[in-house]
Amino acid sequence: LFLSLPVPTRLTHTLLVNAVFLNRSPRVVQNGVSIESLATIRELRDKISRLLKIPEKQLVLLLIGQDFGLKELAKDTDIVQEMLEDMQDIYALETPKPTVSYTAANSAASGSHSGGEQQLTLVWTNRVGIGNQGRIFGSPFSTLVSREASHKQIQLDILNAMRSLLKHDV
Image (cartoon, rainbow, N blue to C red; front, side, top):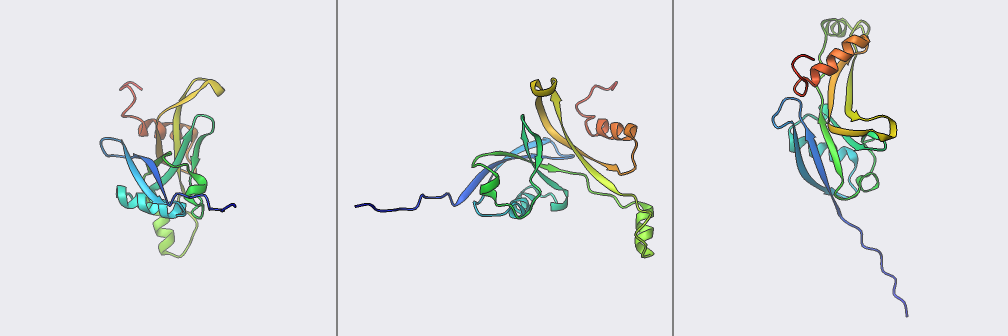
């Protein structure tokens, strides 16, 4: 005689969330978060947002791997247990709040949608070494850049975001 039994599934997922803050000390804090296995990435982002007291619009969830670099957990409808292993490290990165430029505020007030400066959130990690021999180190960073920013301005924005780690003469 045989008896078929379903394989037990975990009801919750526990994740190690590395919170990376813009202007708090310490800059990186690790938290354990438990969530239902069938929860969506949107529900995970909401839970982490409330835990860290960071507005959802300023929170980016990331996976960081030596083989693939950065991967954003951006699709709100993805299921946690399909995307993440139990006890997996993820990063919750606080990003700068987008600013409304004077021209954008004026064009919105006048009903026009042109003339406003568009901003992009730039996210990066540091890597030492060349090609496949390189490895990622440290926590991720973020900054806002204008869509029309020059290469030099983007470099200055990146250095400014990392100024706490750089020597004074850089």
